[in-house]
Length: 249
Image (cartoon, rainbow, N blue to C red; front, side):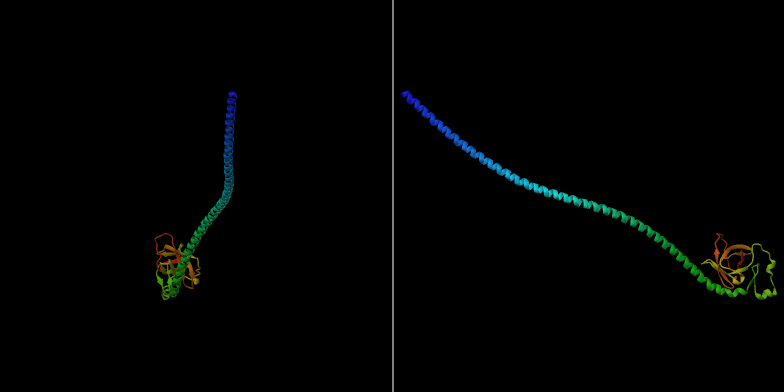
């Protein structure tokens, strides 16, 4: 009887202990489940937040890619503009070089024209200087010339006629005359031969002194009894003087 009571007490104690353990176990499992559910919920929230952030980052990436594409397009435009500018600059440099060459040619042409103008002005001054000298020299036509260098007046010629035709000088053919005026500034002379002596512009005459040739002149202008002629430079030191004799070549 006593053993039965002890056995019963032991079973009852064991049952109570088992129930307590089961209760504690179930309570711990519930707490664990609650903790696990909380962790899961937090994880879901974190995943959701990460998804939102990922979506935002995708939008930002898309914007960045769009900006990169736009920048590349702008860069291509800038490169094309730079290439166009380089081509334009090269073309303008060529045009500027061509313009400089044309300007140099124009300057050279202007310089030549200025030289020609100066030469024309010198010629005009020479011609203007010859006209009054030639006119002033015309009245001296009454003087006859002999090849000995002595002028003969008309009266003296009648008293002492000189037959020039009897003098044979191979280097001094007719017509014959003398130098009336020498203009050293413009290198021309006035001689007492003119249209009545068959003198024509462009004719070249020799100038003599003491039967020796000292130079040559070329006829520029001719009047009735006198002519203006340019002195032809031959590099010699001989100088044409007034009263030197002239004759055709």
